Length: 264
Image 1 (spheres, rainbow, N blue to C red):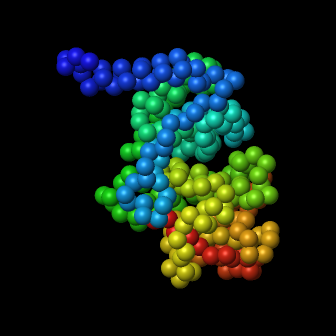
Image 2: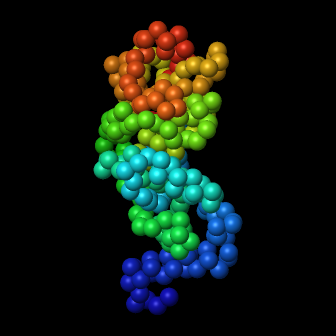
Image 3: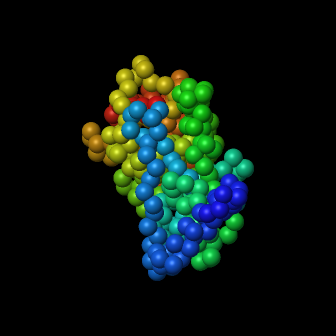
């Protein structure tokens, strides 16, 4: 590469090279799953084990959740991690992939576009996530942002997650999406979320922590909510019901409470 190449030129060439590698290598086609590149390492300010997300591809702008879910499933069929969500604009969108660089994300998006899986796309960078500001603003700001994100889903008939409601996927899917929209890679299943965090006594609960319940079998985590303060939490009660606020002191949840976990 010549010394006279601009920074933009080098970046463009890298993107073109990555795209060419994908096409020439034959690792992407409607009949063959795309193999995602290695995930970037966890950031130093996530001491409890939740890694931060790298670059991802954002696509779609739907007025109906089921359209976004349909696109999500198409992307998953290609071997990409994907989730649909309600954007601040009021439209449903999809994010997929977790790449170590902008060039990798863009090359994949262009390949998806050529194959007709997506149309317009936007690359979300690690700097776009609220977690990226922790070093400057502290964890309290991130906790507030997690609660604000969760509030966005109130009243929405939460149906994401396919047919895994038996394992509490709908409620854990909500927690996963809220955390991922803030840049933290929370596992999908509620029992994995429970294992990934640090135990928090009830008197030390803080906004953004997760609260867990055994709603199906005794002493087995199967439901999760996002704590928002004042003894309240946001959750998806069950598949097809609307996301709502409930109270930890209510008889039903108090009897089934398994504990809380923090990740910040």
